[in-house]
Length: 267
Image (cartoon, rainbow, N blue to C red):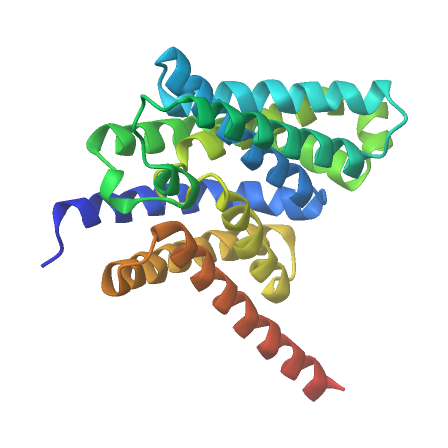
């Protein structure tokens, strides 16, 4: 018989997998893996701001991540620095500032490891509601912007010529990514949410023939990773975030080996 806390963790993990599946596909298609990592690192600054000003952690993480994402988009148009340099600058600067502030918070007690790597014991009914309601809004918005976002992913100039305003949809997509990071804190943790966005989508790309297939396979890969990871976390008493990401990595390696063997057989 599974305990209530584990049922809540499973429901939360399923909700996150449903959201990160389609978003992760766009991260792969648009080559935004480093960008997603930057937002995840900046989330620690959001946590420290929440502790200092006594705000809701998820709201603070979303706010800081969204502001930094928009700031980054503005920097890309106003500086001559390459994107990877800007991403590295923001990622490490925000992480460093967050860690410095944590050093001053000697009177506040909180679980740093749980925030960084996830903690299934910390998931409550409010978190579940936040994940599923917030996730539903994210998916609804993604559905409305899917066509112009996909068009700008394939050909930015053509999408702009068609009057689709790709810059506006790019900004919306970055805000959606910030929202996903905010609602994933309790399960995967701040530092590993990037893996949940990238690995299932990368797995799906190995075995899919078209974008629709890739989205479906990415969701299923995320769901399977959550199930295996959480049961492993319960069995071996490990942090939920690393367990889920490790499960996703193993599944990715299996598909990689299988697809290579299939390619060799075709030759």
